[in-house]
Image (cartoon, rainbow, N blue to C red; front, side):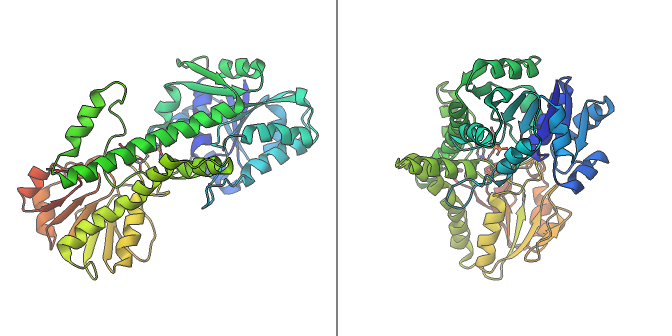
Length: 427
Ligand code: UDX
């Protein structure tokens, strides 16, 4: 099957590379010439474990191509994947500029054969129906295309694995024929299909992310209560996890959720609900807990240091989670902003993110970054922060405060090195 993947961002590249690996001829297109030039030279614009290998292998096999000739490729391919960005505005509404551009390009291409248009971008309920109507209104006969909503459930850092081993494949469409076509694309994958309407598929994506975000805010609220009663939160989370109805995942308390999906999707779902005069009390509470989670740690720091003004703070971890270089809505950066507002001097280290940020000092070496620090804050749970030489860290620091923003350090070990440990609900 000849496939055109429109948009070479994180979702587009992973989708294109995996579809090529499954044996399809894939053409990834993007209007960004520089990005395509780099991809043609073998340079991958994002850090995602396993992706580069997959891209190189399938380019060699002649199954993966990159181009800026969007119309030329579209004309040739019966399958079009939409994987462009759909950022959320501050009020939760969605910026559909990139999707509108794709619609207009399809129209300008004057297609002469049937296209199955598969939307992978996360879009608010009703958007795929709107895409369908827009194409008809712009003059494309409904017999010439089908729209299929096929949301992605990829975790950054595990994207290739997640796409190769999905828990489920969600397909929403107006009729069954395009569903059968998409099923043939995924015939080598072993996953149950969830077949629904276009809007149903969109809702599944938002409900999944909202539920996962809810689990995180729930455990963070429990951690606040446990803190007050001197109870270890990991014991509570482990116990909850043994109940099959709850499950063990997404129950790690800490600085809260960040990234390119949860914050924007929960905000967008709140917006969608309000558009229909529904007040989504739970979604609002989930966001409120998440928004105030960083302040909890700042308060604990202020309690200990009285003032943060002029204090030297080192932050370990800048990406929104480990195994990615993505800093979108990273809790670490939000925390740094709040520390800077209080006059702290910030030094930072991340294994792969090397920002240029004049307000802070970025170090290439984790031990170098802590020299003379009053406090060390772990903001992202990179594996290398779990196995540090605590004696060396203590010797390099001026102060002795360790803030464990992800509850990954054993307080017993660090207190034995005379650290003052700050976590949430840790004994
Ligand atoms: C998420 C969804 O998991 C994925 O299915 C969807 O397609 C895209 O959004 P991602 O944003 O890559 O994936 O990251 P995820 O691993 O889900 O973590 C999101 C945030 O939640 C991170 O900031 C992480 O640190 C935080 N988190 C996660 C917690 O604070 N506690 C947890 O127990 C789990």
